[in-house]
Amino acid sequence: MAALGQMEHEIKRERVIDSITKRRDAGKNLGGRPRIITDSQIRNARSLIDHGEPAADVARNLGMSRATFYRRARTLGLLPD
Image (cartoon, rainbow, N blue to C red; front, side):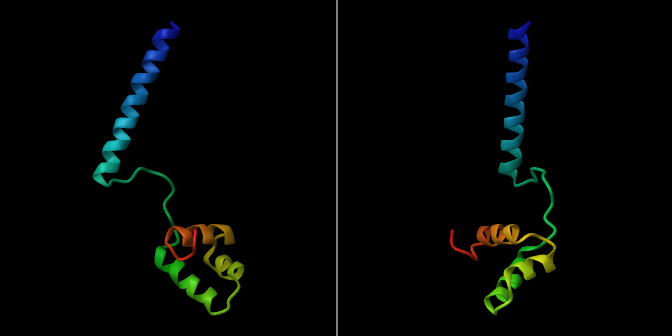
């Protein structure tokens, strides 16, 4: 019985991986939580910080933590890695 369960698990895993690969190749949504703050808002916030606003205050006004702001800014290339 254990071997049969293992085989079913492997088949299901292959199907999931194939489905994810097809969706990724087609450029479709893979799910997950939608982003509320847009990339342009992050860019505008970065310019506020460059002009002297504290990062914690800017992030709080956007409704996110300072760490989340820095993570998003890094993914947009606004901060060095």
